[in-house]
Length: 390
Image (cartoon, rainbow, N blue to C red; front, side, top):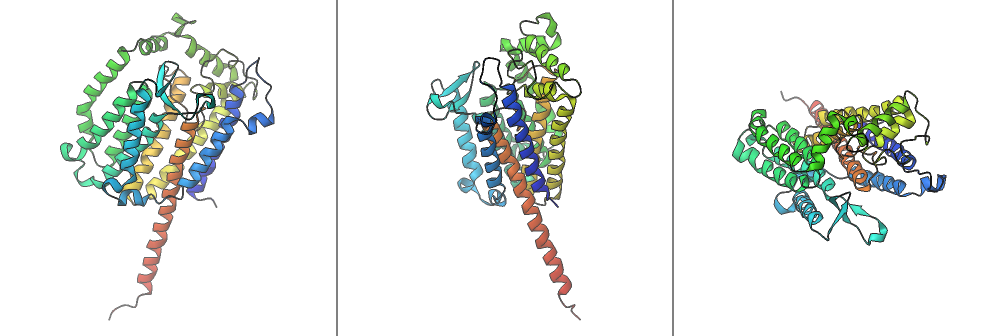
């Protein structure tokens, strides 16, 4: 029988296999080369998927307990936080950051001819979970006090969000929401966040109002048919793709919207292509895999007796779950258009590797749980075998 950790690994492998096939299908073009088995097996998405699985396997053997045991500059979380902040700053520097679709969110890896890039906000997103979990576990007794317990992690969280929100509002919101969940789970009071909510909403409104394209996305969401060839084009084409799939879909590779109609079909709007080609059945399969991942992960978190590991696992699950809901809501036009990837599915090497690695830490936590259970059982056996004192 599979353990919870092994189940998580197979779920990730299943999602990545679907991702490789669907990214390859969504990337087809009429004027491009015909799809072949070789192009599927040796393409860049397959290499990214293999790398993600390898990283997940390696991190599944990491002793997560050591992150919480080390103090000061000896703690790897401190160094990862410093590095992630430095990379986010570098991405904003002209000449260092790589500009794609008007946003400087990437850093190039190697010569431009390689076409390889890295998204620092992805690293910051996961590192902030570890940082919040570490602080919450270390200061559980003082988390209800604002200045000594809650203020320091909030300052770090706000600083990182400020760096990310300049070019990526969706990821910044995700970092803030997940960080809040982890801190509340660590013992912070909800009413303290409620006091900060008006200020956070004001900042959010300013970030939306200060960028015309964000305002246009809001108006397009309210009435996409007011400008079907302009700001309303993207949500309309997404709805057309979903509607065209019906129950069983047009068939793998037979989608029409990917041929120049639906923008970002391999990345943020891949779920629309899944709905078109695999229908409601394919969409339910994907959603079912996410639900199974979350339920299995919650079982691991529930059984964990170590505060840091429990908070870290909760943050990982919250990130995957909220990000998946945000992406599906955008694709189905339930919320305004926002560029945010579907975890382990939307094309992107950084996202696949980072997300799979985070799940690998959950697998490592499951292994720690089983070791703790074995140690507890041995202690009970030793107590039972010990002769009673007369």
